[in-house]
Image (cartoon, rainbow, N blue to C red; front, side):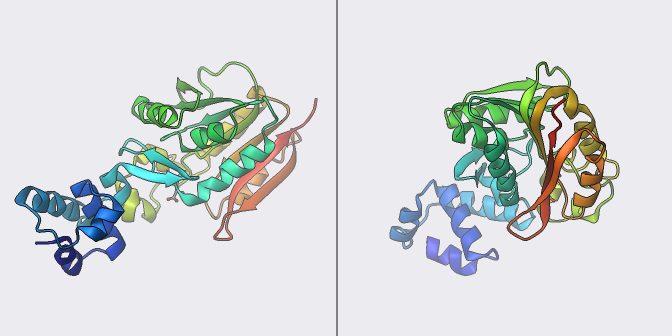
Amino acid sequence: MTVDDWLRQARLTPLEARILIAHALQWSRVELVTRSQDHLNDTQVHAIETLFRRRESGEPIAYITGHREFHGLDFELTPAVLIPRPETELLVELANARLPVGGNAIDLGTGSGAVAVALAHLRSDAQITATDISFEALQVAQRNAARHHCKVHFICGDWYHGIDGSFDLIVSNPPYIARGDPHLTQGDLRFEPLGALTDKADGLRDISTIIAGAPLHLKAGGWLLLEHGFDQAVAVRRLLTNGLWTDVTSWRDLAGLERVSGACLQQR
Ligand code: GLN
């Protein structure tokens, strides 16, 4: 068998098949082309078969290869962390625009560290802290910070647990899928950590906890930015409408969906 034979008979899309073959053989994209007629040995055939079988049973490509690009950076991933989504890049852009020069920010529930590391990579002037309740996730996040030479201070804990001091910016992509949502049992989500996807309540429980605690941990004039589900913007803005916040706003992702909401803590 050659790579070309595999590509012809694969039940995957050509792109997925190429990614998996390159990963199985540890070949570059260029080698995939220049060596497409090489005769593969048994070990190589077995390696490709194993990865194809995993993909055919639904496992996400990002977990099979252990990598995903986010905000132009390569992130290591394990099944202990959510796979970074392109729409979450909006959260990074909004955070970058609102973080004052030399300021400090905290990313709550950092998972792979995608948001915290992307922000730290853009802003070497700022101090970035990131938390997660999952120690396993923090280990992945720590490796991602090291991979991109970013200084991020990591804390293991539940939302604000163990957080001292006040920040110019709080950012979070919390679990916001409601318990029992059919998406949880479909596609890639079946393989992702449930605790990163759903709050096991109405989808607004963790978002409410983060909003309720934010005034205690934000400087006056500081911003809170939250990613949420495509149909949650109105509810999130309502949670921010309690006299403590100004500039309550939602922003649309590239698909045109209101994906991030936030507000500025009133000057006292
Ligand atoms: N955006 C993810 C999805 O809908 C969910 C991530 C999250 O809950 N923060 O697949």
